[in-house]
Length: 159
Image (tube, rainbow, N blue to C red):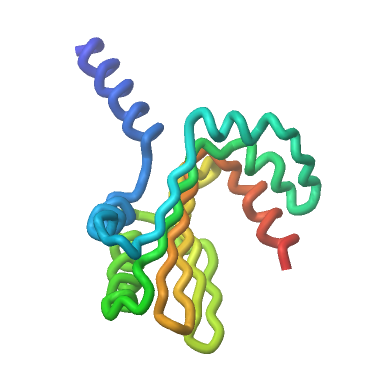
């Protein structure tokens, strides 16, 4: 019984280490074959390469956040997509179903930014949804182990 519990614990830790939104991944897979779909996925050795530049970002306590990054995924739905508003609403509700918490919401004249996080003291995943006035949707997903206090301080100082 102890071995079964130990195996289950390791499986859960491995699952938590690879935490990523299933709904963000599903949207990515839906559009990745489209020629007008812009996407960028940075992780692994490139992140270590970027850390080697020793950029000092004392403002907004961003240095600790950047050092915690393990992977960055960015994609933009094809321009003038008739379904981008519907995709935005669907992704918003899907993230809430996945137990992501809405950390910040800002909107102005038809454009908006939503920031979702997963985790309490230690945040493992940050998803940023950007919807502009033209109806374009951009998704930014950050993976890592972020301290919630550092993220809050960074958010306060960026104005």
